[in-house]
Image (cartoon, rainbow, N blue to C red):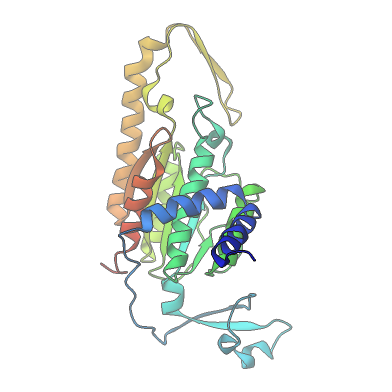
Length: 293
């Protein structure tokens, strides 16, 4: 007769084998970070009505508004403002530049971005928070099914291939987490930040970069090819433009930080040659602060 602990262990291995590898990795990182930290502090549930939304699998039947549902062919859930405000909306840069890595030993920027985003979603869901992916057309939800859904979207690359998110109407005082390289012109990023902050939405931006993008360590004659149809450029002595390149990059990042600070958002930088846990911990601690603090 098998020992019960052995059966449980085997069953856990079987379940893990059926999960997307990204989700397994994200859960491992999230577990490491969750040790010694507490979940988000919640405020009491309010009664202010926010909106109706379509009923999703996993919603409690007690949330259904039968009067509203009777007026159409859909089943509607009545969502209070507190419930919507406690949600965290996630966004990841899906542009082709995120596929870059300077060394085969490093993850691509997209791989690291997906890992961080799914790991923070795991931490939030463990605390009972609702999460949703901007641009997915799905309402905020929580639980294991939500994480599987996010991992599937990432694995199938079923998210918009854009470098700057579009503005979406979400509840006042909700949170937004955006992760990408944010190398688009500041004039394209600024309107998005302002649109959300004007609605009282707190945001957190994490810039993910490959170490070579910051250091430009190349020497001699190098041809650089754009990953988003920008074309290529041949530089005879790459080391001769290094200082100017780094100055332009730092100026851009100062602009990003300034945009975030003026909107009351946070801005952080992360390199793919660094461990993901410190960046995840810092982001989660910011999300742990009460809304309005």
